[in-house]
Image (cartoon, rainbow, N blue to C red):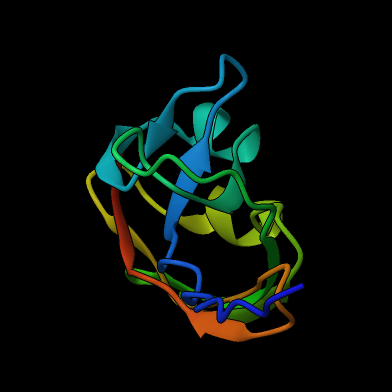
Length: 116
């Protein structure tokens, strides 16, 4: 029997999204404080990528305009910080790190949300 050489490509980079209760994914936009409290952070591929892979959010930084900075682990937003953000101000999620099924940590995109 002969041998074959296989080339395994690395997984494509996922994107970070905020997901609401209905499963809608956003990377920017405007949301109410109540909406933000019920959202979670995920790492996933958009519809153009035909690969299914599970990524786990490890950590990220929340920057609330006029409130400060907080480092967070897990997928839920820090509700104490969200309560302090005034309407019309910005919430920025950056330094988002996700662990892929290949064991690699990935730094993902920044998410900008204007608070209603």
